[in-house]
Each structure stands twice: as C-alpha cells, then as structure tokens.
Amino acid sequence: MKEFENQVAIVTGTTGIGRAIAKRLAAGGCSVVACGIESSANHELQQEAQASGLSLLVETCDVSQPEQVKSVVAKTVKTHGGLDIIVNAAAIHPFGTAAETEPDSWNRCMAVNVGSIFLLAHFGIPEIKKRGGGSMVNLSSVQGHACQRGVVAYAASKGAVHSLTRALALDHAKDHIRVNSISPGSIRTPMLARAAAHFGPDLPAETVMERFGEAHPMGRIGTPEEVAELAAFLVSDKAGFCTGGDYLVDGGLLAGIGVQ
Image (cartoon, rainbow, N blue to C red; front, top):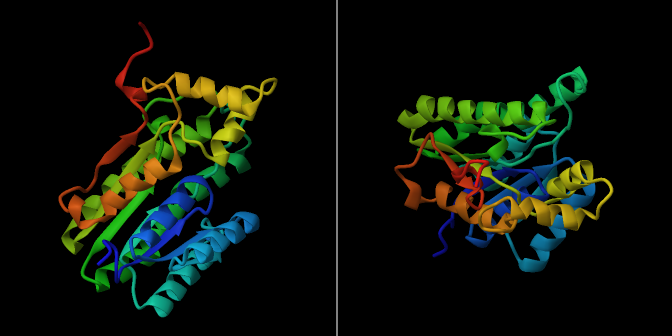
C-alpha cells in the first residue's frame, strides 16, 4: 500500500515547487487536484501526470478569488469523495522597495501569497474535518525570516504566512488537523530564474543562480523535489506530532551570519 493511498489532496501552484509536490503526493498514491493560473504550466503538468499514470487532475484557478477556490474545493470533494490534505504553494514575487512598489502590486501579492491560504482554509478545512482530520502545509520562504533589499511585498507576505500557519495550527489542533510551513532557500524554479534576471540583468540567469547557490553553505541551490520530500513527510502520519512549525530547506543559509 502506498503511503497516501485513499487520500485526497489539493495543491496550489503548478510550476516549480507546487508541481513537484503535486507529483510526489500522486506518486505516493494520493488523488491530487493541482490548481494554477498559468495555462501552459497547467497543460504541461497534466501531460506529465498522464504520461506517468498519476491520479492527478489540473484545474485552472486564480487562488486569490474566493468563488474560484470554493469551486475547486467543491469539485474535488464531489469527484474524490472528500479532502485530506492541502498544500499551498502558489505565490508571486514582485520586486521593489515600499516607495517603488505600487499599491496594486502590494495588494495582489498579499492576495495570492497570503489570501489564498486563508481561502483554502476557509473552504477546505470544513471538508477535512468531515474526514476526521488531515494536514495543511504552507510554502513560506527564508525571506519571511531574513530578507534581501528590494523585496518588501514578498518578504512581508512570507512573514504573514508564518503567523497564519501558527494561528491555523492552534485553531484546528482539536480537529486533528495539523498545519505547518516550509521555508525554502534558493530553489531551481521559474521564480528563481526571474529573480536572477532582476538582480543580474547583465548576466546569464544561470550564472546569477550559481552565485545564489554559493551564498548557501552547501554551495548550491536546491531542487523542487527536495522541498517536495519534506512536504510529503509533513502531511504524512510520520509527522503526527508536528504542527505549528516552520521547517527550513535552505542549505544552511540561515544558520550563519554575514561575517567570516
């Protein structure tokens, strides 16, 4: 029997880390509904799932919109009979200081990176309760602990993810629902490639990402699959006494200080 057999999950985000987590859970026997807004990414993930014989359906969804999230949860429950796991990996990464960031950009970042977690909890947790309990994992970032310059909206949103995770964990421990967050460092994703283009516009993106990796004590950037393995552990019964915590996948980045 596979570790997630007879379980049902919703995973937000169909690129990078979200894609890897959706595939990892499905490979473990979970029936997964992945949702994202990028049509090309959605199509690619669905094709990959079909080629691998995974129980993974992809839905187009703007996770910042209540009615769309409500619809995905309802469709998941109708199709699979319930809901056990939610993984919130969808995120956007605007750049700029407070003076440079437009209010619409700030609001959109908060709606996607934080609001979507609330919406999945609002509509999804009642369904998980019906199954007698389950688990939620929220993707945060090392930027929620310590940040670089020029990422005010993104850093603030990821700090909010930590607080929201703790609040959800406390509120729903009595319902046997565990809620944790993961804070990755630099991970090889489309988002990191966009960050490399922003911070090193005159250099090849791969060169900049290698420099990001050198800042980590392990000397490299991570992979989405490495984050997915931690997410799989946190939603499994093996993590049965873990709730309200944040777990680093950062190659030791936050273990040091900026002097040698």
